[in-house]
Length: 252
Ligand code: NAP
Image 1 (tube, rainbow, N blue to C red):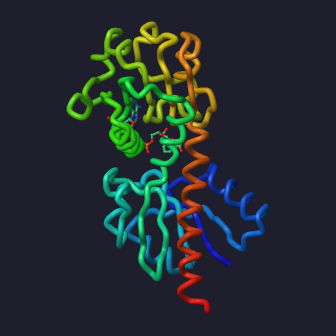
Image 2: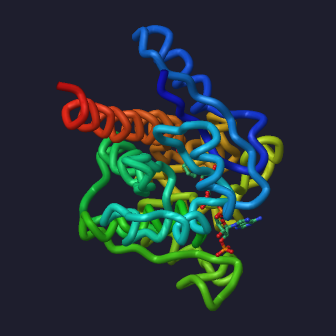
């Protein structure tokens, strides 16, 4: 039996655990997926050995801090500086970023205008993955941070004209995430109209206050559920490919 899991600190709710348990059951794959809470990412190699992991996902707060403990990074994970999927190959830990695949799928689904200028809210790991994808597609973007040193705008400095010029708005902050469902990023909402597309990476709730407020003003909206599903499927493809390669090399 192959063992997979999710590494994080507080993991009471996990889409991935349900997703993989249902997948393994339905497709009769001899594997399990467990939630693994660790207090210190420096213990990751011991955890991998102890639990005989073939691969795992990584979530908050370890997506960046795990990097020094990995043997190799995919080009994308290196460029973004964050890892959410690791494959164990002959004792070596190789890090990938499948959030990128999820973001690409979501932007494709939204049929984003390649001439649009994007406004990315937040400057954390998910925001960096969004920046990577937008750069790959040559889409211009500006960033918004609470700290004026980190972003092109602060929320206080974001006026109606700037929001009107940025017709793709991407929320990569946790603002509005359950249980704080009534919160929304501070924006001049009246500058938003039918020409806007708004992508909120949050998946719980499905309709955040940001999506409700912008949809009400005519914007096309998208939540983080497709991204979540796509990154899980992409993780599975990476693990399965490694497993097939291992079988080919070791079983005659
Ligand atoms: P993070 O690193 O904890 O936070 C992202 C950024 O949000 C921070 O760097 C910060 O930027 C800003 N921020 C944090 N608290 C804020 C607040 N109270 N007000 C305004 N800005 C705040 O999180 P992350 O890993 O990048 O994830 C961001 C969001 O994306 C989360 O909601 C997460 O659930 C979601 N996500 C979804 C998926 C998916 O598959 N759908 C995958 C990954 C992440 P500044 O300090 O520069 O303001």
